[in-house]
Image (cartoon, rainbow over all chains, first blue to last red; front, top):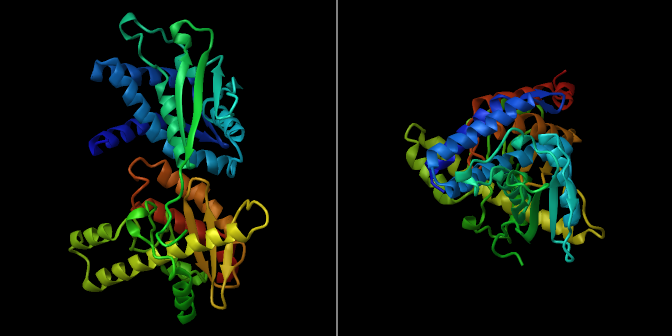
Length: 194
Length: 198
C-alpha cells in the first residue's frame, strides 16, 4: 500500500466523520444524509477508477482503515474483553452493527466446525436508495463493511475472511455476509522466550 | 531510583528483546505536573502528554533516524533520547515477561491478567486493551486504583484525540499537541491528583 494512498483514505474517512455528531454515547446522524454521503463516495470512486474491480478493492481498503480505528471506539464503548470463542465474536460483531449502523443483522448458517457464519441483513442503511446500473453489476457496493470487519478483527489478533454471498442489490432476498475465521495472530514474542 | 533500575534489569535481563520483531511502539514523556501526582514517568504504546520526548519501539533504526533528522536537538536531548529508547525496550521486555508469567501461574483462565505491581519505591499500573494497546503509569505507592484513570485516558483522550484524528497515524508516536493538552487536563482533574495537591 503506497503512502500517498493511505493519506487519501484517511482524508475520506475524515470527511465521513465530520458529519457525525456525538451524543450520549451514540452517534446521531440523519440516516438519509449518511446514505447519500456513502453513495456520493462510491459514485466518486467509480468516476476516479472507472474499473469496477478497482473500486471494490478501494472500498475494502478504506473500510480496513476505518476498521482499525473503529475497533478502539467499540472496545472503549462496550468495555468488552477477549472473546472466548468465535460465537462470542459473532455476537460482538452483531453488537457493533447495532452501535455503529443501528441495524441488527441475524447470525445464521454456522458451519459444522463453528469457524464460519453468516450475517443476514434485512435492511441496510447503506443501500437505501441504490440501484446498480448495468455496467457495474460486479460492484460490491457495501464492500466497505468487509474492510471494516477485517480491520477491526485484525486489531484484536484475529484474521478473518469475509465476502458477500447474497446481495439485495443483485435481486437476492437478503444481503448475506459470510465470515470465516482463519487464524489467531500472536503477539510479537521477544527472542529468548519459549 | 536505584532499586527501580535493578528491578528492571533483573526482570528484563533474561528476555532479550529483538527489536525488529516488535511492531508495537512506545512513547516516553517526562512532565512536571505528573511528578506532583507521584508519577515519575509514563510509558506505553500510546503514552502520554506534557513533555517533549517520544519514542518508537519499532526499531533502533527508527530512533537513530529521528536523531539524525533532528538537527535542532541539543546533544543532551539526543543522549536522553538514546537512553530512553533502551529503557523503552527494557520496559517492553519486562511487561511481556510479567504478562506471560502471570498468565502461566494463574490457576484459572486470567480475565484481566496483570494489573499492577508495587515495589518499595513506586507502583506501576498497567492497562492493556484487547487491541493490544498498553497503557503504563508509574506512581508513588500512595496512589491506588489508577487503573480507572487509565481506562478513562483510553476512552476519553486516546480515543477522542488520536483514534478519531486522521492526522495521527496509529503506528507512529503521537505528536498531537491537543492530545498532550487533554492528557494534562484529565490528570489534573482526576481525584488522584486533586487529593494530592491540597
